[in-house]
Structures are given as structure tokens and as C-alpha cells.
Length: 462
View 1 (cartoon, rainbow, N blue to C red):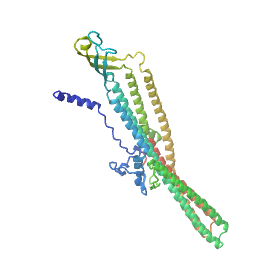
View 2 (tube, rainbow, N blue to C red):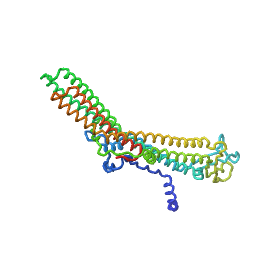
View 3 (cartoon, rainbow, N blue to C red):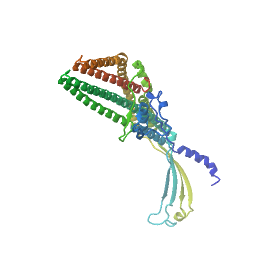
View 4 (tube, rainbow, N blue to C red):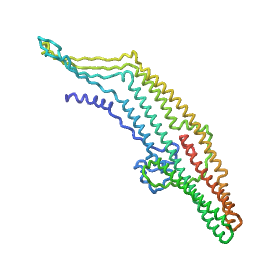
């Protein structure tokens, strides 16, 4: 036996290599394509331990940290990655050859009395056999299943990339929602401070007879309204931060400080929407996923078609016949070989083939639907961005500057008694509304910029 082992060892190693469990590929969660340019270099090193949500308390959270933490901690992204592992597990199953089946039996045994030469029976025999199917190799069933499973892995990867695209786009939108709410809160605080100072000035004017008590009542009413508005803006900031925390995977009540600016140095003009739609069709991971699903459907049709071929099972075995006691002859050893082939008379796998073809048509229709939705999404974001861009380059700064000058002049004139309280309050209201619109315009610009990049699947605006 020892002399045979060196000759059998290469064959055993080959068999072990064929059936060993492949290792799953480690998935690297990287920033999506629409924020990659210039971002990776500023992110923390992914080879070190990821940034934990618990480490963010009382720290400044800018856009880059927001994106990185969402990539590392968002449970929806982590859940989506598990889909890749599940698809890889299906591929592992598809790669494994079928197991042999061993049959052991002891037949023709005496039931109510023993066998002998005077009362012959049997003779009893012991059978040991091994059966192994070969149709997976002969008809290519295993190869077809492996191709379909491999395409399933590619579909899962594209699905994860699309989940990352959507979740990071949501995290960026939530980040700018916080900045917008903080700026609106600061504006409300500024208005409240201005009215408090106006109240003090009006009280002095009432004391010296320069204004009536009704003006003081009017200022108090405006101050109460401003205080209510300030409370509402504080709640809006907290709500925006809570929404951002959901993208950061924060399950505990941690305090984070979002830092950043809505200011825009150089607004960028936009390209033709048809060009953007073409880029989106080439770069969007959900479009790639649907195309992979069509390819997978073709592979599933091929798989179901080869499954229609008959099953073929070969078997070989040895038999030991115990004849000496049963019929008086010496015990004998024998062997046998055979093939079992199913006869596909009725079942040609017609139902599963028809279902696979229907799934292919469904995948093609899903792709057409998504392309229609993509065009609509690109066009909507294009118009929103273009409108924000035109406002910024044409009138936003001018209107804000003019309203501020008018307010300041009214304040100076009111202090000297040259303007009425109502004129000053009207100037302050116009300034506040113009400033609010300016903040919303800046926020809309950033929201539409990243929404358009996410809709295209590539960074075209920076």
C-alpha cells in the first residue's frame, strides 16, 4: 500500500484542488464614481481601522468625512455587500462537482429458516457499489450553471455599486440640508438680534417722546414672531442632523458638528442634457446591473435547456456470495458495472425554459423602463441646476447687496428720526427674505450639482 501512495498522491491532490472551497473575495467599499475625483487622496487611509461613529462626538464633520463614514458605517451599504457574498456562495455551489453515492446491501438472507445443501436458498450476498452522475460533464450542465452563477456575482456587484451611489448621494444631500438649516438658523438669530437692538432703541425714543408706544408694541410683536421663527429653525437643524446620522450608521445619541460653507467660488455652466444622458447610460451602475441581468437571463435559458437532457448515472460495485452453507459451493466474489439513463419522454424542462425566457423579456423591459426614468431624472436635475446657476451668476449677490444697503440706511435714518418704524421693519423683512432666498439658491445649487452627478454616475461638475 505504501508503494502505491507516491503514484496516487498527484491524483489525490488534483481531486482536492477540484473540490476545495474557494475563498470569498474581500470587498473594498470605495467612493462612488460621481465623487471620486480628488476625494480619495483626502480620505483617511482605508488600510487602517475605519473611522467609527463613536469617535465623531464633538468633532468637526465635513463633507469628505461624511462620505467616508457613510461608506464605512451605513448599514444599508453593508447589507448590500452581503448580496455579493451570497452570489459568490451560489458560484461556489455551482463549481462543486456532485457527490458520489455509495450503496451497501446484504440481500437474499433466510427469513424463517436457515439455508443448507438440503434446503437450498439464496445464496446470501453482500453488495458494495458506488454510483456517480456524469451528465453534468457530458452535457455541460455544470459549466452552464457556473456561467449563470458568475453572471449573478456581476449583477450583485453592480447592485451594490448602485446602492452605494444612492446612499452616498443621500448622505451628501443630508449634509447640505444641515448646512442650509444652520444658515437659516443663523439668519433667524441675526434677525432676532437686530429686533432686540431695535426694541432697545425704540424704548429710548418712547422715553424722550420721539415715538409713540404703538411703535414699541409693534417691535415687541415682531420680536415675538422672530423668536418663534428662531425656535423653528433650531428644530429644523436638529431634524436635519438626525437624518444625516441615519446615513452615518449612528445608533446612539451622539453629538456631531457639521462644518462647511454654502458659498460658491466659480459656478459651472452645464453641458447639453443629451450628452449627460449618454454619459449616464454608460456610467450608471443600475443600468449596468440591468444589462448584466439580461446576460444572466440568457445564461439561465442555456442552463434550463441543458437541464432538459437526460440524467446519466454510472455505477460500479462488487458482490460477495456466501454459497458454501446455502448451496454447498465455495463462496465467490464478483463485480458489476452499469449506467442509469433517464428517459425524457414527458418532462423536457419545458416550464423552466419558458420561465427563463419570460424573465429575459422582463429584464429587457426593466432596462427600457429604467432608461426612460433615467432621461426624466437627468432632465429634471438639469433644469434645477441650470436655474440655480443662472440666478447665482446674474442676480443673487446683487439683490442681497442692495437689500443690505437699504436696510442699513433705514436703520441709520430711523435712529435719526428720518424714517418711520414701519419703513425700517419693511426694509429688514426684505433683507431677511432676500437673504433666505440667497441661502436657498446656494443650497439648491449644491443639492442639484451632486444630484446631477449622482444621476449621471460620474463626476461632471465639481
